[in-house]
Length: 106
View (tube, rainbow, N blue to C red):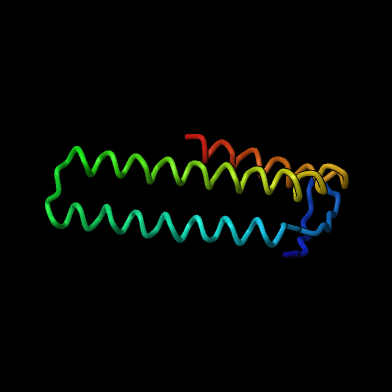
């Protein structure tokens, strides 16, 4: 999957491709779909007044799944997009990634 991005940083114009491995993206998308299903199951537990301890345990599992998916997305982005951005001197893409990491890690 390739997208082209154009932006300006410090007066320098950058145009680079945003490339991802389609197989990795498919796997990530499938994991997100499974997490949605798991979260729906947790919602059903709450709606049916399931034991709060059981709900919290399942919710913790969903949080773990989402963190794992985020790590996979981060690795994919670094391996493809950030490597390309660094080679092209695209500091804006690197700074944008740093801001995203800060938000993800909160």
